[in-house]
Length: 134
Image 1 (cartoon, one colour):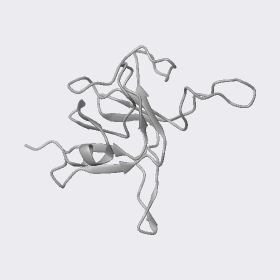
Image 2 (cartoon, rainbow, N blue to C red):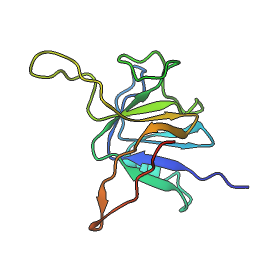
Image 3 (cartoon, helix red, strand yellow):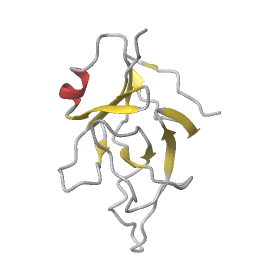
Image 4 (tube, rainbow, N blue to C red):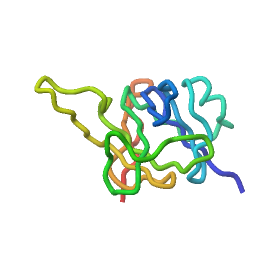
């Protein structure tokens, strides 16, 4: 039995550690298998991976609750659970009124989409079909 990898590339991945941000994350069977640059994470693919272009969206760890929080009460690390939130923008930024906006596009728990939609970025002139939640 093979496990299909899911790769999110082209975004900002904030691991929650003191590590620098990366642009991509990959997981299989609910476990994070790679964090790094787009090329590094694409290099983990065996060719049958589900690749999603984040289009600049931000990924943060999803803690115990049902909603994304900033700062998160969890981390993203290789070998850890693929519990994450895909946010429309970097949660470290504030709007013109000095407020932080935490707009979740998608929530993933154990590698499975549980709410929202992952970004749809046009590919070769045609949009890819989005993964919809339950």
